[in-house]
Amino acid sequence: MLSVVLPAYNEQEMVPIAAKEISRVLTAAGIPHELIFVDDGSKDTTWEKIRAASAELPTVRGVHFSRNFGKEAAIFAGLSQSKGDCVAVIDCDLQHPPEKLVEMYRLWEQGYEVIEGVKSDRGKESVLHRAFAKLFYALISRATKVDMSRASDFKLLDRKAVNVILTMREKRAFFRALSSWVGFKTTEVSYEVRERTAGESKWSTWSLVKYALSNITAFTAVPLHIVTVLGVITLIVSVVMGVIALVQKISGTALGGFTTVIILLLFIGSLIMISLGIIGYYVGNIYEEIKDRPRFIIADTCGKND
View 1: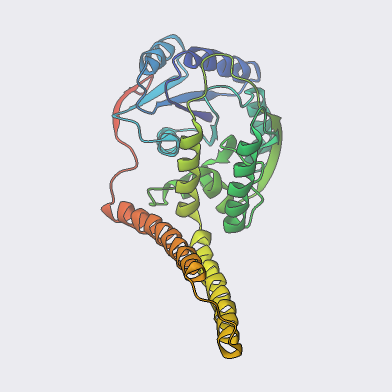
View 2: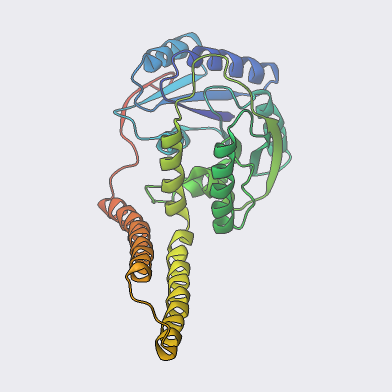
């Protein structure tokens, strides 16, 4: 059986559409399945729509969080609730084409254990968004040793890979990277990002920046290495400026004034503050981990296993 996990946050318009469309596609392909909608503490009627869909379609199950815990938590909740021999994750807004689930499932039947959905294009995005996305995936790719420039949460995992991911206790887990990091027999399925058929994106620019920072610091220590690089740059600049100052002093051409001193102080002070900020982010992550709070809290469920 194929379990399909659909994280949902304020997706009241899309839940009925996604439930019917994905069920139609998988039923037509003769694939036994269950759909697990995870309501990530939505403020609209998303949970009521999920309950209605579970009453209408026996293959639909629902999980309702006590509050908003984030998309990563919703994905992990869906994985933990799934009962299929393989599990797919797909966005509730259907920008990931449901037809690709059939292709992924057939590849799984051929023996592949991780089937990655990769974007053939990034859809309609601004130049600034594309630039930040390129930098983000460059850092994550360096950490995972896997090219993630076209990666997404759209993928299908064998039960073996799902069980391994669920054993990882880190609270700030980054599913998109972890599913590549675990290895196993992997292949790819290319897809084009679709436009939403209803509703609007819940991701603002600031929320995407926070999401990127959280996942970078959760999965890689590269930003800490940047602190070292900045320190080396500061040392080189300081040595050069020191040599210039000594030469001018010895030759008697040194000029009075505080311009150079002020520039150096501002430069060094800025680097120190940036470095402390990066280190502070990692200390914050350590603090969150050692509290050992649960990734999510389930307030309610619905469906055949209610």
